[in-house]
Length: 372
Image 1 (cartoon, rainbow, N blue to C red):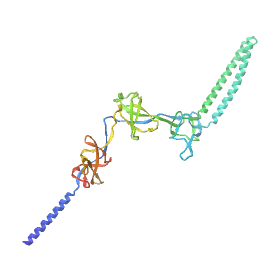
Image 2 (tube, helix red, strand yellow):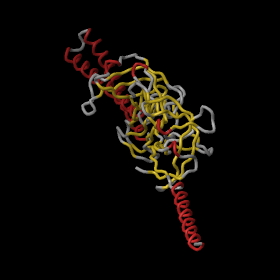
Image 3 (tube, helix red, strand yellow):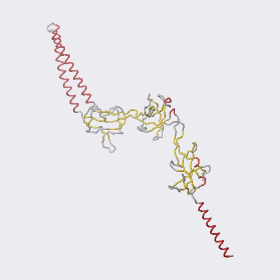
Image 4 (spheres, rainbow, N blue to C red):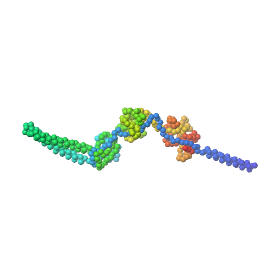
């Protein structure tokens, strides 16, 4: 009997220990959960339009006289030396940017002046002959044919003088065109010539832009074009700059683009400090409406009470690379509710994962199993 009791007790004890181990293992089994990414959502009622910032004026400066470039304007470099003027440099109106070799044009001008001197001498001689013949004809000492011949020589010499003067003017213009000048104050956008480069008429040497005023160019569909009018004030914002800019509508395309089916609209903006750069992307809303803004948000089901802060809230983040991950309590500051999402002002970063299902059954540091 004693032996039977001992055997029975041993079996019962073993069964009890096995059950306890199974209960402990079951209590440590990771809880299956689902997660969602922290994401940015656009909130607001106005339609956002994307615009491109372009210079108010931008031109390509081409040579009108051909030849080899004699020199390019020199400016001080960062190391104290001299360098060719290049993109990013500011120039004023009338600045000589590059000069074509002038010797050939100077020779043509000198030749034209010499021809003018010869024709002028012939004209003076013809004038004297005509005056003398006219006097003789008045006293009937010269015939009418003599007077007509003198008049014809005078007219011919006068025409030669006019032609020579035109050649001088043309030579002077060609000589002046050897110098490529800035037509207005602006920034050098690009330079395509160097000293020694051969250029011909219409060869582009520089591109210059005036950005003291810039234009925000955007497209508006036909359903909204009636809301845009010339002179309308418009607020422009950019992601690159914190402050908004105010401009006015200065141009509206009379016809839609055949491919995009939108009307091009230009908003001119004063840019005295050159804050807005050509190529920047801007945003705007018509009629001065508030632009949609990006808000970081999480599902409402991910939010729990913060056990460490009275009236505080928190979320559980899932951290790890595999199927088995650990949960971490993260205090957050909440914003407004947007449908089944709620804004998060602080405490999270975009791209993190928060637990949305089973979040009330776990605590910080617990192991969880993420399921699809």
